[in-house]
Image (cartoon, rainbow, N blue to C red; front, side, top):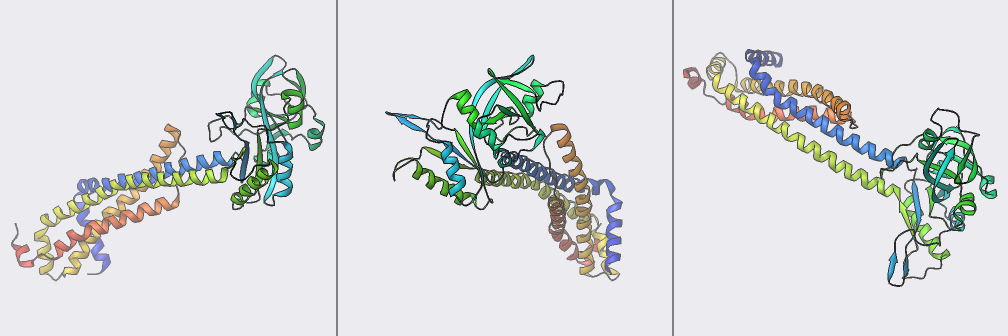
Length: 406
C-alpha cells in the first residue's frame, strides 16, 4: 500500500470512534497548551525583571560610600564620608572604560507649589546622571554644568512629584517651587519609569545640582554614591576593578585594609536574574511536559485496545495481501495523527490560556515561536514513540490466528 492509502485507512479507523479519539487527544492538547503557557509565563517574568533592571541604567556601576568602625562597633554601608566629588572627577578622567560619571547624594524634603505639597527625596547630581540612567525628558531638559558650578536653584521633577504638585496638568517648566524654604525654578520633567527592581518608585524624586544640595540644604561635602556608565557590558567587570584600584589609592587604603566604599555591578545582577529566570522557565516547562507524557501513555493505551478490537480486521487485511509493514505503518500513522491533531489543538489552547492569564491575572506573558514549534515537535515525537509498540504488536499477529479471533 502507498502512503496515501495508509493515511486514508488510518483516518477512517479513527473517525469510527470520534469520542474515544477526542478523549485520547485531550491529554496531548492539555500537555502542549500547558507547556506553551508555562514557558510564556516564565519568559514574561524574565523580561519584566530585565526591563526593571535596565530602567536603572545601561552598563551601570554604582560606587557607594562604605562602612566604618567606631571602636568595636562596625557601622553599616553609607557611614563613611570619604567619597567626594574629586573621586567622581578622577574616575571620569583616569578610568579608560568609563563613558560617563555622575555624583549622587540625597536628602528628604517637603516640596511645595501653591497649595500643594509633597514629601519626596531630593537627589543632588550632575547633568550626566540622566543619560547614565537612560532617563528621557517629558518637558524641558536637564540643568547644565554651569548650574552645578554656580550651585544654582534649578530642579528636574519626576512624574510622581509632577502629579502631586500639578494635579491640574499644567506645564511645570519655568514654575517656581519651594524645596524646604528655598525657591527653585523647574527646568524639566521626566518620563515615568515606574518601580525599580527593588520595588521603589523611581518617579518619586526631585533632582537638583549636587553643589546646590551640598551648600544650601545638607551642608555636607561628601557624596553618598557615584554612578558610572561603562562603554560596554563586557567592560563592566574591568571598569569595576579599575575603579576599586583608583579609589583605594586616592583614599590611601593600605594592603590588607578593607575598602571604605563598595562598587556594585548592576550588569552582573542582571545576569544573575536572567540565569535564575531561565531556570524557573525550564522548571515550569518540565512540569508541564509531564502532562504530555501522560497524553502519550493514553495514546498507547487506546492503540493497544484498538489492536485487540480489530484483530479479525487485521487478519483479513493480511489474508488479502497486506504486509506486516503495511499494518505497522497504519497503526503508527493513527498514533501520529492523534498526536499531531492534538498538538495543533494544544497550540491554540496554549495561546488562549496565555491570553487569559495575561488579562485575568495581569502577569506578563511572552509567547515565543520556539516554544510553539518545540511543543508541536514534542507532541509528534510522543505520538511516534508511544505508537511504536501497538503498531509492532498489530504487525506481529499471526494471520490465521487473527482470522479465528472472535
